[in-house]
Image 1 (tube, rainbow, N blue to C red):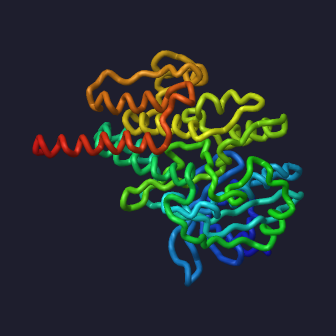
Image 2: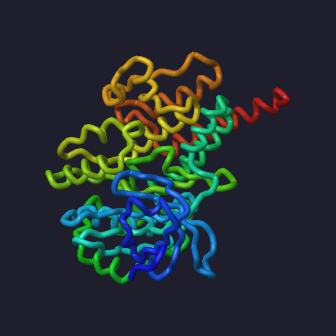
Image 3: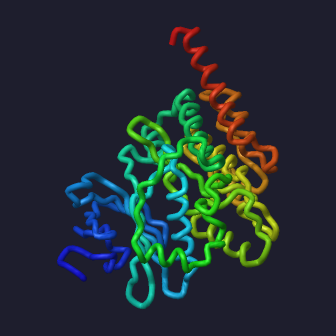
Length: 361
């Protein structure tokens, strides 16, 4: 049912929701759209304000458009919903509600109601520092990276960072569709909640900050089971399609960009992304984007060969640069694990704090 200024169950064209005074209803709860936070093709993320008396405040609504005849799009959205429900960690955003809405001509719209973080993302922090022309102090870089590693560990080692029960709700249509769909597509976290998983698309824009500055992983759209092996052409095609839709080339590990039959998806791909994120916090750009800008080396080629460099300035310690180098080893086995990487950042942070005390800073 359509009302003036209100589009129930997403009947308004997806692309125009942010342009005017529009309301979205998810499982009977109304939200006022107040802004567009992200546009990634068929996936839009809106800032909304709840119009329910018992649920005031701002939230995010992720709207995934699934064209008619593309069942894999619905399957991917369902897998993402299941992933949010599986990880009950303070370092991973909470799914508060979800609904699958039928649209005209057989297409569907999947809504996910998520937490809103007014402090923004790591990417917004990086952009602000670039505009101000001020580098992020090394202790702040280290403190952020320790906490980001802690968040990634909650995915690589689920259950270690908290086990609170989830509060998400789903519509009856969502449950029925989940039961009917083939969910082999990369296996959801709910199928084996204590096993290790991999984010695959870890990037600054997908790491939000609380008012206290704690990093929170906000996007599980590309999250897959660790050890997922591309044993056949179907699995290989699905993984490639997933990364084409959700992957961020500047932060993707080289092995994810050249998938081959029988490839195995391992946590080391997230370690590579962490190295890129650390570099971006230091210099405002990913290492391989900078290489492309400086020397014209195509990003894909620079990434595959591990070609990057550091600016010639003494802002950051050689120890921090070495940690970044270890993360960006082209050979996955040469990268540290999430536990060892977190220890490297923490040890350097502790050393810098001791040094500051000695110098009276």
